[in-house]
Length: 181
Image (tube, rainbow, N blue to C red; front, side):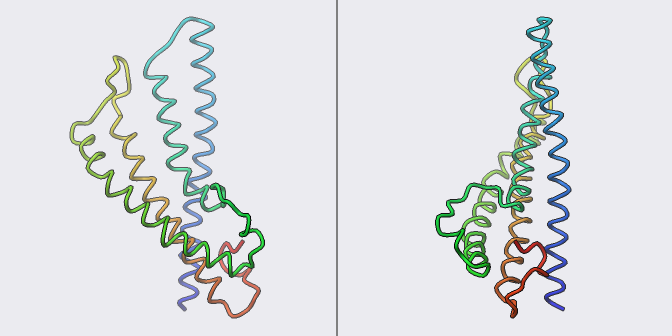
């Protein structure tokens, strides 16, 4: 029963992260098209708007801050794998478990709490761009810091659970573990 719950937890968090990652991929395309439009308007027609340029920065923030959990799920973060690539599945799970518990979660919790007042202050004054014609949504952009910490923490919980399942499996075949790699 506990194994079933753990597998369902991993699958649920993975599904959320996957959906978020696919939405972010479309935002990336939109950001590229917007950037292309800005360049064409500026250098082709000598037109430009601060708000349009700032929106690219907002999209950039969305892509990186909300895409970090998706990158973690797909093991896309930088890793020095001189030894890791030769480890067995259980050795990899043990190392990933250690990294998630000792590094990932503490850093996410630190980022969340150190940023909370910063973001809340921005919301209190409904902070907007200091530029004339800029976007009045700076407080939403700063909220991405908290969202980064939350989504990475959620995916970290999935990774911890997945690695625990791998470590405590009796059989060497752990392919039935949710998302075993």
